[in-house]
Length: 285
Image 1: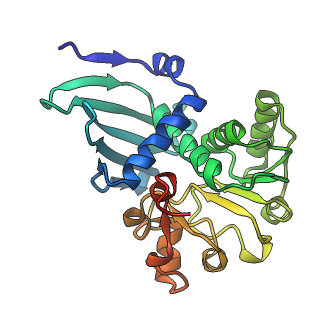
Image 2: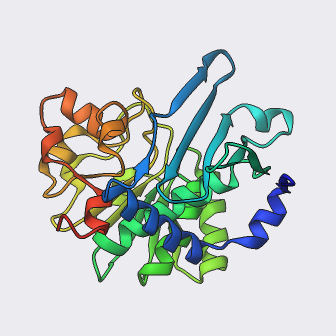
């Protein structure tokens, strides 16, 4: 069987955010029903050059294929004229183990999947009436999360913060034009968060950025950035006060990111958390 080769542009032309949200929702449902085999991710850091590499894979039971992806973040690359993100996806035939596809997505599918997961989260858990969205961070996931949110909720306005104000201004201008939204860059995180009833954090922070005292009752937070044991965007008191803490994959989240820090601090028990797949499958409210 010939090996299918797809370029990034061909992949971009083949899938959009609305379709990605629906597919990712079905994947989370399968995960919630115990119909997925998913080994722990492999993380490789190269701190000398400010780089991180992730290898992740899974098989949905009954599917004709299983997949592994390699996603790279080389954060100094813009200084030498190269994109920060790169990577590829390896597709294998689940019936015989033969390679079936090589997708040169340059991390686009990773970005799209992460955005779509945020869309699934918002579909099930975000307030039906959003007053204002606060976005902390202004990179590709700030854009992806807003694109996904716009598929499942009406967004009246957005406040966006980034530690580099020019990036916040650029992202705000792009999203204003693309989504026809009122997106305003702000100078302080607190100004973005206070008064918003939906907060999206999409940074590489290793120190808490969002404080519990800024969060109003009824606020939904989608915390995206903390995909490593040293990363953290939320003060642990945010999770301590939350009525509901939802993990995409609890076994991973107790070792990585926000839940990891809250459990280690003794303010949250892993048993008190719910997996997104259980909610999508209808097994958790």
